[in-house]
Image 1 (tube, rainbow, N blue to C red):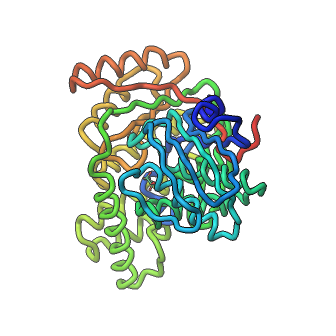
Image 2: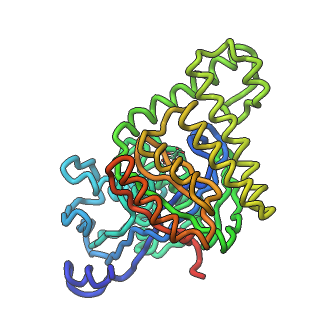
Length: 381
Ligand code: GLA
């Protein structure tokens, strides 16, 4: 328990605790920074914080996962390359203060079980839980979307990773047994119930997302360039979100082959998300699963962010009985696949994937059955 660890490290009890979950994205990949649609679910893996106010302006933070401590002043927050884990917390402090909150100094312990660098958004969980903790320490109830935005600013502007808004949003606003359908332009969202007889299974390829950051920026740039060219050709669009499949096809010659493929992924993926949400709301999990499979193919062939390991995991899954759909999840280039599996088949599925992955690649895949969970700001159910 985080309270226990706090006692061991700082002596005495913490005043507040906060937690935020990791996530899987069921469908809608690389659409968030194109003003599009996503359908993630929070999972039952969390980052926890315990904190206690101090009389001064110092922050003393201890990471259980890194067995490492830092100290900094709220009046002078800088990036610390030697303790990179603390930059998420530092960045959140910067933007919470910028939002007008007067923060007390604090003793803080954090730790959790969201696998790192696995595409399950452990960094968003660290940020969202930190933002929730600071609001508690300052005795203020956060405005949810404002908290999501400042957690994302910590990631984009302080840590320096140019991600979209999906991960912080779901980590804050996920709901137990539901996925969250989010329009990343308007930030309107609704929770979509998941069927109890269908399980979300995550397969971790064990391959860290090596190229993810540089290639992510390249993809984002290619999407912007495609929009610029379409606009120059007379289309009144602000983002790939605004482009229809017919418009894209009609303007194919305006785009380079690469730009066309990137745009085709985003345009078709947005359409798949809308159809997937309708399928889920109609209880048509089979159709939902087919859309997941098509999403993987599009990420592999058009967006080119999959990897050999992720492709092996997806195709192994497609062959198993009781599997509705399987695809890579998150930014790509390693990390995890997400699988929708009938409950009755879940146990055999876990075994078959472990064995198959070992046989084909001589690698060990960690496979977890997940529970869609509450985000940091959801009221406990
Ligand atoms: C990462 C980013 C998200 C999103 C996904 C791809 O997880 O943090 O904002 O862009 O990649 O869908």
